[in-house]
Image 1 (cartoon, rainbow over the protein chains, first blue to last red):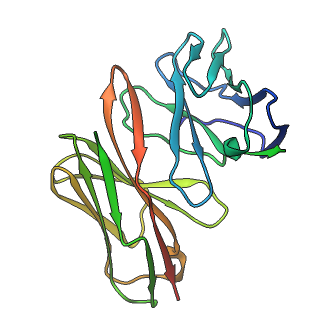
Image 2: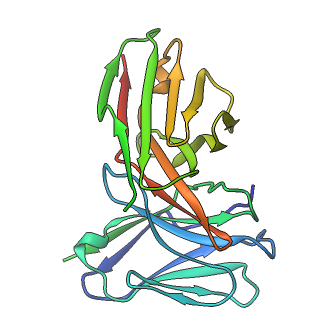
Length: 110
Length: 114
């Protein structure tokens, strides 16, 4: 299965932007890039996904490198409620499966 | 709107006892269904997924099994629990939107095997 690499943890100050990196050098042309986050004692929740172009939604932005071998999840203004584990996942074409890695634990300082 | 239910929320079972965890989805039809397990402090491990009634794919060989007796019901079972089966069990559903597969997770069942 395609693999992603993320830092174990990152820290941010409240109300500052956060850039969460992800490397996926083995990505194939039809693999989608997904981001989910998991708050303590809860199931993961969908954040955003993309294929080639940058994407924006109400939660975050996703910046995808031109060669698609890396991507960055951008939280424009971190809040304390954004403290969570963020997972970068590749969905192989038509596989139905999301293979979760260990993710990045984001700590937000007040 | 769609909702996903899991029960029980917490469970403490002795080693060697059987297990049955149930997951149901409302408000959608023919969803893909998934069972994940998360050990303490770890990421999620995909255990089983199903694209239709009676269709189960296993991702990791172990003493667990899954069944899908109805379109929106997914059951995780074991005949004899092991200590290593402890963890946070999450059910999820998805329907393919365009070409991407967005998954929605239930509240989870926290299982402790003693």
